[in-house]
Amino acid sequence: MNDKNLEKSRLGALVYDPAPESASIANIKPSYGLFIDGAFSDASSHEHFVTLNPATEEVLSTVSRASDADVDRAVSSARRAYEKVWSKTSGAERAKYLFRIARLIQERSRELAVVETLDNGKPIRESRDIDIPLAAAHFFYYAGWADKLDHAGYGANPQPLGVAGQIIPWNFPLLMAAWKLAPALAAGNTCVLKPAETTPLTALVLAEILQQAELPSGVVNIITGDGSTGAALVEHPGVDKIAFTGSTEVGRLIQQRVASSAKHLTLELGGKGANIVFEDAPIDEMIEGIIDGIFFNQGHVCCAGSRLLVQESIADEVLRRLVRRVEQLRVGNPMDKNTDVGAINSAAQLARIEELTAFGEREGATRYSSSCVLPEKGYWFAPTVFADVAQSHRIAREEIFGPVLSVLSFRTPEEAVAKANNTNYGLACGVWSEKGSRTLWVAERLRAGVIWANTYNRFDPASPFGGVRESGFGREGGRQGLEAYLNV
Ligand code: ADP
Image 1 (cartoon, rainbow, N blue to C red):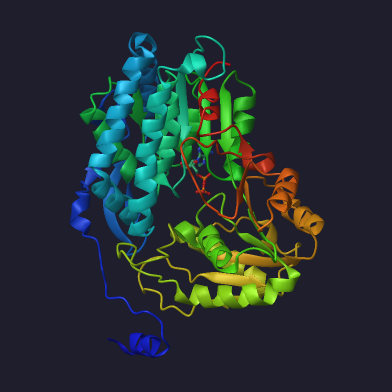
Image 2 (image 1 turned 90 degrees about the vertical axis):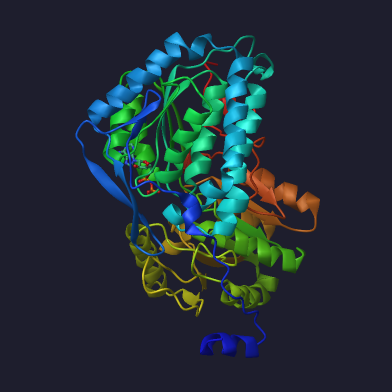
């Protein structure tokens, strides 16, 4: 036992021996091409970029950078597959493929979890227990809808849109791919998917799974690249629908680009979720909910409960307990099964978190950061709670997208609602109270797409997810998630 652990065990904290998952399960190839028309091929420009393990800064693999010509090739492949095959494939037949993909994700779940954790930096416990099972669940769920579209509430025989261009972010790489692909395919569309540049690997393993499932060539094309590849997909005249999840800034840009075309559009953008806690809430559960709401996935969560609104009468106690709980979070090797908080996904994201938190201190908020020892290599940020935050502070207004909680207080339900709504975003909120009537009163007045009561960060394929205002529009998940891919 090293000195620090000895000190911790003397203080009564639990000390864990390392329990790392084996990286060899990942089986990552040294390089990957673009998945177009059912096969992997090099980019026409032969340009590549590397993807890193953010916990160690080691290169994991090299992937192709799709140029405009490659985007064109992928869209043409999706169009051919739509016209010749997929639009003529019955719902029951499409369901068989989706069920097959879901089962293959389950079969290869351990490999996928390891790849996700290596490429993204999130704890293996989360990729193993949340990301991968939920991705499979989305395919199972939408497989169930594929032959029942007549009963989805969009009239008889609703029609697909055609070719969907789908652009996803790096925080839940495989899960976001599943959120996009499963409903699109169930509804009868073909797809061109672009994963984020820092986390392309699980989408490429998924491409292998699509081959294993013998999904007809061109029904799904997966092209890697950066923002310029995404922009080329948005601009392509052969695309009928754009589905985007990412920053509000890029979402706004895409909305402008798409405005002059007939393309359908759904956007799932940023957030600044408020977790509202009343004095009558069960405090132990509430503390865990607040912790999970902000530190899950290092806070790289668009619906994160990044603002805590706490009733004044319990504010001191809640803050004391939170600070203690933050100190207990195990930060470090994402591959360790006991890790709670992993690595920040990229140097750029770390710089943004550092900039905003430095601003928080300068603006007068009180900072409590975990005293955990951070690894020397890789991108790391100690879990942090800010008290004495004013609504005007940048840390109360801007999305930090990191393990940083801003605590504000309120006295009355009216004030809680006013403060929670005092944001340009509107993705998610949490309400903690023993009184159902109070929870409903508050929930009715919150401007957010998703509201959790006495819990936070709960996801289910049957439950629609999406925002209002600057958090975007359109829903993913549930029956409503089909609407985004049907001509209704
Ligand atoms: P974040 O700030 O979370 O990284 P971004 O919005 O920058 O989010 O990225 C989300 C996805 O959008 C990524 O796949 C990225 O490559 C893509 N992207 C970035 N810029 C553009 C753009 N101008 N047009 C289309 N896609 C883009």
